[in-house]
Length: 203
Figure (cartoon, rainbow, N blue to C red):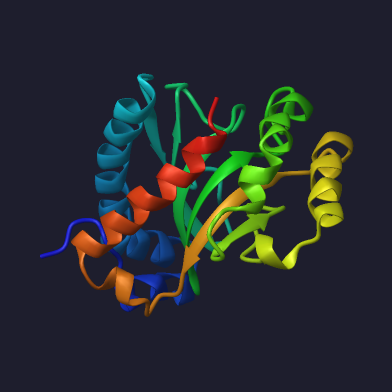
C-alpha cells in the first residue's frame, strides 16, 4: 500500500460532478495522502530550516456551489494560516501535480517578499530545466523558466508589486501518469529534491 503518492485515478476526482460528490471523492482518494505529506514535509522543513512549519490541507469550506478544480497542502510557519506569507504547496489539478514556493496575492507586503527571488535571480535562472513560474496559483498554466527571457521574469516581479492580483511561484510539476508517481519511494525522493531547490529562496 502506498501512503504518499497519487495514482492516475486519484486525479479523476476533478471530473466528478457536483460539489458534494466531488468533495466526497477528494476526502476518500486525495486528502489522506495530503495529510500524510503534510506530516512528512512539515517535519522535513523544520529539520531543513530550524523553524516550525504547520501543514494546511485545503478544506474548500467556503464553497457552496462550484466544486474545487484543485486541492493542496500548504506549509507555513504560521499555525493559523499560510496565505499572508511566502509558503510551500503540494497539490493537484486534474492534469497536473505541482510543488510550489512563492507569494500569493493575499500576502502581506508582497512587494517586499518577492525581492528574495529578485535578489537570487541567477539561482532562479539556473534551476533544473523542469522548473517553471506560476503567476496564478488558481491556474494550471505555468511557463518553464528556461523559456522565459530575463525581461519576462522581471516583468513578473513588477506585476507582483503593482497588480493587486499579482502572484509569483516557482513550481515543478508532474503529469498524472509519471513514472515518479508509481511508488512512495520515488515520489518522496522527487519531492525532497524539489524542496531542496525551493529552499534556496526561503528566508
